[in-house]
Length: 150
Image (tube, rainbow, N blue to C red):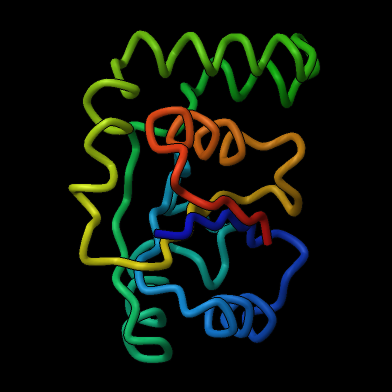
């Protein structure tokens, strides 16, 4: 299984879907806190699910268990906490949610039917995005998963 990550910001719909097609993505896991925001454009949950099916024959699932809390996200966006503090708070949240046990440990089994899975968030790069942290948490449980950030 290959695990990818992608952010939709600063990408056209054409570029976004071409990246998914080029990497044979067959399941998109939406790990955003708010996947219905007006600013989401072509990635609003219902629209995205439709586009994925029609354009790529790709499945869609919203996995809110990987999303940060509103407080953590707001504090980072408002510059009340640094990226390092955000990482610590997000990783602690993942630990408190028992994601390592309940989701990450069962990740390969839960999504065994898929070969190329992608985690979706909004940030244009993975460097300072929780999708990278989520991918790393999954990797800790399944080191045989290859991670690529698009």
